[in-house]
Amino acid sequence: MFEYLASTTKDKIMVEVERVTPRDKLISLLEFREEVYDEITWNYRMNFYKLETFLGFKVGQSLPITSNLCEKFRKYSSVMSYVIIFLMFQLMIAEHEVVDEPTTYFAYEGRKSRLFLSFLCVIQLFLMTMHSVLWYILRGELALKKYLKKLES
Image (cartoon, rainbow, N blue to C red; front, top):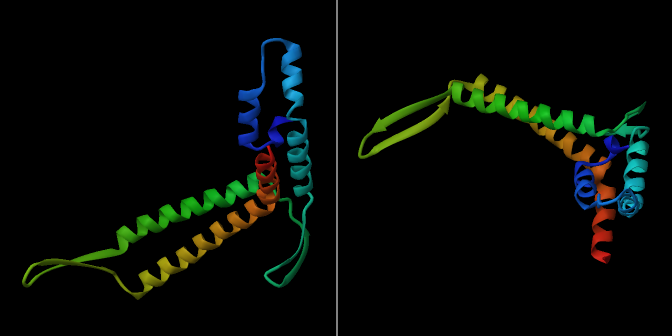
């Protein structure tokens, strides 16, 4: 059951559930029943989310939006940013000039290098945008619902 819950909810339950006696454990666990039910129901519905259109194109295929898919986009985006940083340092040329005072200029090796890095940046931006959109679809409404409940109490 706990594999379908968010890590913050798991942590909250693990910390706040009393474990003095089995009765206390069960009673304090039941206090979280509504929150657990909402998360499990929401995550189950997201497994059968059907994406109809994407960027104006008709897709019409079932796209299960899970935490794993969202996490994959985040990891791919992080790896892409490391590649970009590595290539930036490899493709950069430092030119030192001393006229009145020492000055250093940084430039790329050529136009192809700049275009290639720009292309990688666009890919990284796309991956991070997909992560953000999927997170919003996956967790946004549920996070707002939790926040409003917290304000009420």
